[in-house]
Image 1 (cartoon, rainbow, N blue to C red):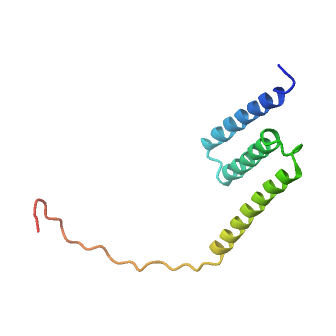
Image 2 (image 1 turned 135 degrees about the vertical axis):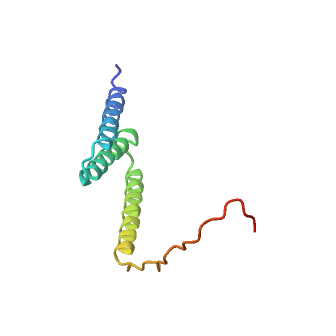
Amino acid sequence: MERGTRPIVLTWLALLALLALSAGTAWIPLGWINTAIGLAVATVKALLVAVVFMRLRAGHPLLRMTALAGLLTMALLFLLSGADYATRTEAPAPWQQPSTVAPRLGAHE
């Protein structure tokens, strides 16, 4: 294996292992831990892709700043969405008793 392709192949294998982990935990009922594992796996996958395939570690500073701006924008959107969700008051719709009229089969009105 060539020296330049080794990190790509190892990253690909790591991504496949993480895919198997996230697919496997989806079938196991662990409650809230499924969500935590899924978020952790997604974070590791995103970091692997950013560091290896996007080459952010050795990239131009402008590329790093652009990636950071995207992350900050996404964090701001999540923060604002969470604040909106947390400050809403519950307004349930009025409930009515269903009518007890028997359906007329074959009748056209």
